[in-house]
Length: 160
Image 1 (cartoon, helix red, strand yellow):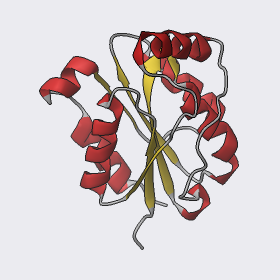
Image 2 (cartoon, rainbow, N blue to C red):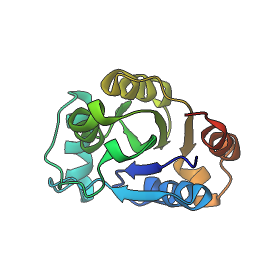
Image 3 (cartoon, helix red, strand yellow):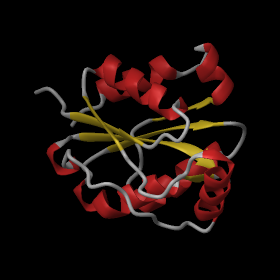
């Protein structure tokens, strides 16, 4: 039986989107972008996003098209903002966590906060991830991120 896998992600600058698209391509699976209804562009959007992330705020997101209940594995991607997941990702998880069978997480970061972000995602989803992956912004720009293939293999070999 083939696993049904969905990659969902939020990306403000395109960095997380690039990783999400590569994951979906390697796994030949569905992909959906989480759209924050709040304007997060520019320096003002960056600052308000970081503040909302630190306060663990939810935000209004565009309704999703793909029902996570129809998938065996949901791979959730977020940028790291102030050592937290983006508010749009927190909102998606909170709205859908009862539908998750299995999860995997990935994040992109300008620097630190990866482990704390994965813990936050784990707690919000109420599920231990089957795999995690992170890459820095500079690694993504240079296509030099490590452990990507290992992440893909863990998901491919996961028994449902």
